[in-house]
Amino acid sequence: MCPRSLFLSWFAPALLLALGSIPAGAQIPHLLNYQGYLVDAASQPVNATVTMTFKLYGAAVGGSALFTESQSVTVSNGIFDAAIGAVTALTLPFDVPYFLGVTVSPDTEMTPRQAVLASPYALRAAGVDATAVLPGAQITGSITVATLPATQLSGTVGTAQIANSAVTPAKLSANYAGSASAGGPSTTALALNANGGNCAPGQFASGVDAQGNAEGCAAPPQGTVTSVGTGAGLTGGPITGSGTIAIDPASATLTGNFFRQGGNAFGALANTTAILGTNDGNALDVRVNGGRALRIEPNATSPNLIGGNAFNGVGANKVGSVVAGGGQLAIALNGVDANFGVVGAALATP
Image (cartoon, rainbow, N blue to C red; front, top):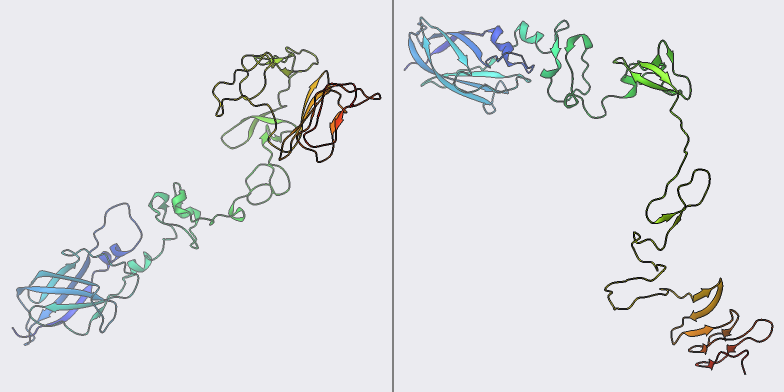
């Protein structure tokens, strides 16, 4: 077949608008209308159905095709009309210049490529119309540095549409009651209006209306404690004036590791022995009537056991010694100044 020539072509501007990135309420087809006048090598208009391949490039010369589509096109007296994107989905963002290459089978691609130009309406769609209103539900992604006048927005913009850290106190209106600074109070506490005035210090709002105003002011409730009772495990109550509440060691409700008046039931222990003592290097005193009756002094070799008078003792650095008891202050005290020594319950050491 003789080579053909594409004598004249143009894009329909109204459909080019559908390629903009602004969402619309209705589903608009992403089609690029292309019309032209096709003649053969003898400059005679073509009358036939031909296979046309449309390619979109990112450059006027060279480069790989970003979009390719082939379709059968009816040509009548040289005139044809094709909808690019009708066979293969046209998903290019159209945010950079594109160039169209056309091939009529079996010829090679015609040159030069044709620049895809914006129509006047597509230029208008590059931004939000100054008088148009954009529902908040149609905003996707985050609003960062762009400015959208409030008059162009209807509905609600949710958290998904607001970038993190994009809203600062300086961007908030000074609409808090009693505040003269943007974003709320600066040096004074937030006060709610109540019947045209603020709640007095020490009062609180008894109710808040839809506008954030207090429906009334009242003093905080106050009261007097008249009685304090005691439950199981405690003694001393009820107290109506003054008194002392203490733990009742004889109470059967107390649980845990402690020595109970009247005896303990330890249950199963790891070493089957009830333990009373210390876990450090301090001596253990057993007292009666407020005074020491027995002292157990620890050391690495063998402990010293000192009974009787509270001033009985074992010499420094002595180990394994026993004072069984006895001794009397100001008269005679019992003591051992040797290792592994023993003194019975005498009035004084012999």
